Amino acid sequence: MPKMHYIIPVFVPHAGCPHQCVFCNQKHISGRRAVPTGEEVEGQIKEYLQTIGDPAGKTVEVAFFGGSFTAIPEELQQELLAPARAFWEAGRVDYLRLSTRPDCIDRQNLAWLSDWGVRVIELGVQSMDAGVLAAAKRGHTAEEVRDAAALVKSMGFQLGLQMMVGLPGDSPDKARETARELVSLKPDFVRIYPVLVIRGTELAEMYLAGQYRPWDLLTTVEVCKDLLKLFAQADIPVIRIGLQASEQVNFEGDVLAGPFHPALRELVESAWARERIEGLLRQAGLEPVDNAGEQVLPVEQVVLQVSPRDISIVRGQRNSNICYFRRVWGINLKVEGNPDLPRRSMICSVKAS
Image 1 (cartoon, rainbow, N blue to C red):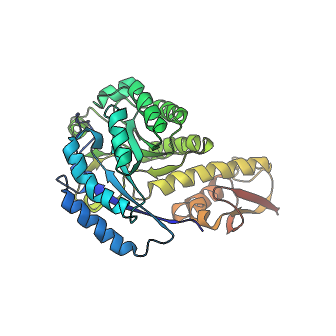
Image 2 (cartoon, rainbow, N blue to C red):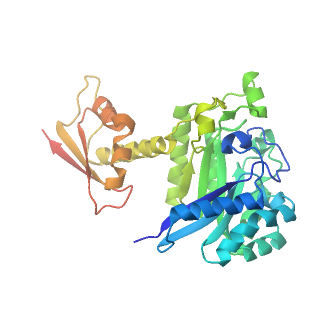
Image 3 (cartoon, helix red, strand yellow):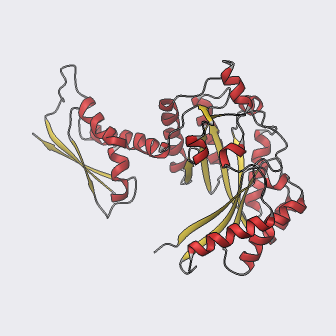
């Protein structure tokens, strides 16, 4: 049985960021307005560890999210890391994770971070397109991303890469090309964040002035589906799609516009499942219904076996995929769980009428 994995999150909003990207207001996103003290970090870790209980059979990490950790003064880095390091040295925490910018790391600071228990480093890449990076005011280049990724991996860290879709100047083709470039960097995992217009950002001003139009949900789901496929084909896990829901994002009106959905990952997975089902149906000799609304081959029912954990994804949110295949393909799709099947695999059988 795999170990249960627990993450103790510590948010460090805007700390160290040498640039103010047009899309970013991490104080709203994280719900935290100030950098925590070392004492607060220690208290938070203790609180989480009490909830986690007996560490046997569990993996516990402390993750520093937000800001550009390696760009903040070293004294502050050490203050934040010290309590986490103490728990790591005591064996109560397995490792530490942090996020930073590609242009804010070098061999020297990576070496001492390793000594302090850091094992995972995520780089905020956002795009590999020069025009998109400039429009977002990222302040780094795609070449700096390549150099940083290679350095992180060469020094034995796990590498995570974060990309965004829908930035000013972005397009579906540019997003797909960014994903292909990230695959070439061989990260251990990636995150995909569709751009939301957050109050208090330059992007919000651009949106209100009619200078920026966010992607709609349908486009976002379609593009993220293609990105998920690209990474899956390269055996690179996508550990998140979409901004994590929070009380601030959901209820305080901070999202002015953009493809925010509390179950975006499920929508993307369901769209990919629908595409795979269509491929299986065509292999079985079926096609979408003709103009008369009838299937070319008479079919009573199509039974789809999937992993029990995939049933809701395959059926789609509110049975959207079931309805789609009834409307567009003229078939009744029955989804059954098969515990012997791995996730994302399918067995399709057609019962003729």
